[in-house]
Length: 145
Image 1 (tube, rainbow, N blue to C red):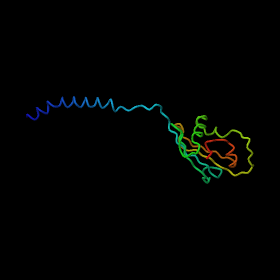
Image 2: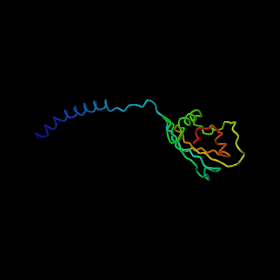
Image 3: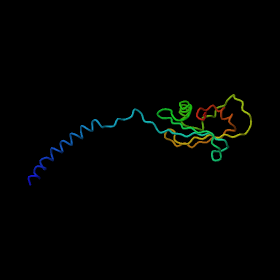
Image 4: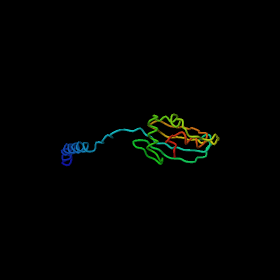
């Protein structure tokens, strides 16, 4: 019986000690909020020899991450991310500008693809150019690798 009385008397002291420990631990262990949240952006970009991605022979591939900073194996990641940001991630609107560059009228198709996520949105893009010269004349930094 004595043992039970001692244990019962110790319970309030243990509870008070645990409460103090929790309160002091909570103040120091609270997670800090990040300065800004970024939606995920991770892409795989490819250039292939052929008229469609399904039948093309892959020539080159790079990765591109655009948030919170430009990164990946793309040689001009910052320029590519800037171009995508200006187009609000609309791949169809990039690389459509005219150029004064002369390209031969030889059909040797090149297909470019972008697959992954940009600014939290799923991306599955494909565009075919008539030949490598036309692709280069498009002036897009995204597929310049």
